[in-house]
Length: 116
Ligand SMILES: [Cu+2]
Image 1: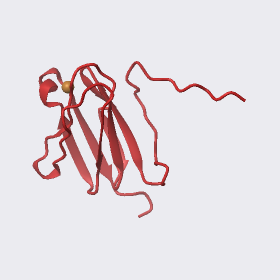
Image 2: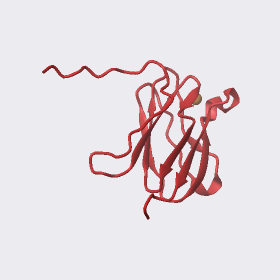
Image 3: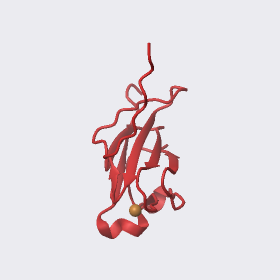
Image 4: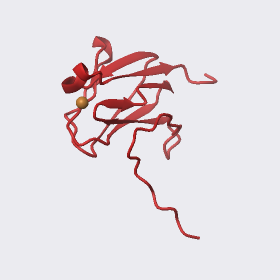
Protein backbone atom coordinates (compact mmCIF):
# COMPACT_ATOMS: atom_id res chain seq x y z
CA UNK A 1 0.00 0.00 0.00
CA UNK A 2 1.65 3.27 -1.07
CA UNK A 3 2.48 5.79 1.59
CA UNK A 4 0.74 9.10 0.91
CA UNK A 5 3.25 11.77 0.05
CA UNK A 6 3.33 14.53 2.67
CA UNK A 7 2.07 17.81 1.38
CA UNK A 8 3.40 21.21 2.33
CA UNK A 9 0.64 23.70 2.99
CA UNK A 10 0.89 26.77 0.81
CA UNK A 11 -1.72 28.76 2.66
CA UNK A 12 -2.11 29.25 6.37
CA UNK A 13 -4.11 26.48 7.99
CA UNK A 14 -6.93 27.90 10.05
CA UNK A 15 -7.40 25.07 12.49
CA UNK A 16 -4.60 22.90 13.75
CA UNK A 17 -4.89 19.89 15.98
CA UNK A 18 -1.64 18.22 16.93
CA UNK A 19 -2.33 17.38 20.55
CA UNK A 20 0.80 15.45 21.51
CA UNK A 21 4.31 14.70 20.36
CA UNK A 22 5.74 11.20 20.01
CA UNK A 23 6.51 11.08 23.74
CA UNK A 24 2.94 11.99 24.65
CA UNK A 25 3.73 15.55 25.71
CA UNK A 26 1.30 18.23 24.56
CA UNK A 27 2.48 19.89 21.40
CA UNK A 28 1.07 22.43 18.98
CA UNK A 29 2.15 24.22 15.85
CA UNK A 30 1.87 27.82 14.72
CA UNK A 31 2.74 28.67 11.14
CA UNK A 32 4.17 32.07 10.25
CA UNK A 33 4.59 33.93 6.99
CA UNK A 34 3.99 37.29 5.31
CA UNK A 35 2.62 38.70 7.59
CA UNK A 36 0.70 36.43 9.87
CA UNK A 37 0.77 33.82 12.57
CA UNK A 38 -1.69 30.98 12.04
CA UNK A 39 -3.55 30.28 14.11
CA UNK A 40 -3.17 33.77 15.53
CA UNK A 41 -4.91 32.61 18.70
CA UNK A 42 -3.89 29.20 19.98
CA UNK A 43 -5.37 27.64 23.12
CA UNK A 44 -3.35 24.86 24.72
CA UNK A 45 -3.12 23.07 28.08
CA UNK A 46 -0.31 24.08 30.42
CA UNK A 47 2.91 22.24 29.69
CA UNK A 48 2.43 22.39 25.94
CA UNK A 49 5.42 22.91 23.73
CA UNK A 50 4.54 25.22 20.85
CA UNK A 51 6.57 25.14 17.68
CA UNK A 52 6.51 28.10 15.32
CA UNK A 53 7.47 27.18 11.78
CA UNK A 54 8.34 29.60 9.02
CA UNK A 55 6.44 29.21 5.76
CA UNK A 56 7.37 32.64 4.49
CA UNK A 57 10.27 33.91 2.43
CA UNK A 58 11.05 36.97 4.52
CA UNK A 59 12.59 37.02 7.97
CA UNK A 60 10.35 36.96 11.01
CA UNK A 61 10.62 36.44 14.72
CA UNK A 62 8.49 35.53 17.72
CA UNK A 63 8.70 38.17 20.44
CA UNK A 64 6.68 38.03 23.66
CA UNK A 65 4.95 41.27 24.58
CA UNK A 66 4.44 40.32 28.24
CA UNK A 67 7.35 41.37 30.37
CA UNK A 68 7.02 38.33 32.62
CA UNK A 69 6.50 35.75 29.91
CA UNK A 70 9.65 36.40 28.01
CA UNK A 71 10.24 34.20 25.04
CA UNK A 72 12.15 35.53 22.11
CA UNK A 73 13.15 33.66 19.01
CA UNK A 74 16.15 34.55 16.94
CA UNK A 75 15.45 36.08 13.54
CA UNK A 76 14.00 33.23 11.52
CA UNK A 77 14.48 32.67 7.81
CA UNK A 78 12.56 30.36 5.50
CA UNK A 79 11.92 26.93 7.03
CA UNK A 80 13.22 27.84 10.46
CA UNK A 81 11.50 26.64 13.60
CA UNK A 82 11.38 27.92 17.16
CA UNK A 83 9.89 26.16 20.17
CA UNK A 84 8.78 27.35 23.58
CA UNK A 85 7.17 25.34 26.37
CA UNK A 86 4.39 27.14 28.25
CA UNK A 87 4.60 26.20 31.93
CA UNK A 88 2.18 28.80 33.34
CA UNK A 89 -1.51 29.40 32.81
CA UNK A 90 -2.24 32.74 31.19
CA UNK A 91 -2.55 34.65 27.96
CA UNK A 92 0.74 35.31 26.22
CA UNK A 93 0.66 37.83 23.42
CA UNK A 94 3.52 38.12 20.99
CA UNK A 95 4.48 39.86 17.81
CA UNK A 96 7.02 39.78 15.03
CA UNK A 97 9.23 42.77 15.73
CA UNK A 98 9.79 43.78 12.07
CA UNK A 99 6.12 43.38 11.16
CA UNK A 100 4.13 44.39 14.22
CA UNK A 101 3.22 47.47 12.24
CA UNK A 102 1.64 45.20 9.62
CA UNK A 103 -0.52 43.57 12.27
CA UNK A 104 1.65 40.48 12.71
CA UNK A 105 0.49 39.55 16.20
CA UNK A 106 -0.47 36.32 17.88
CA UNK A 107 -1.37 34.96 21.28
CA UNK A 108 -1.16 31.68 23.12
CA UNK A 109 -3.85 31.07 25.72
CA UNK A 110 -2.63 28.52 28.25
CA UNK A 111 -5.36 26.78 30.23
CA UNK A 112 -5.19 24.25 33.07
CA UNK A 113 -4.64 20.73 31.89
CA UNK A 114 -7.96 18.89 31.51
CA UNK A 115 -8.50 16.45 34.37
CA UNK A 116 -5.91 18.01 36.59
CU1 LIG B 1 7.47 39.21 10.47
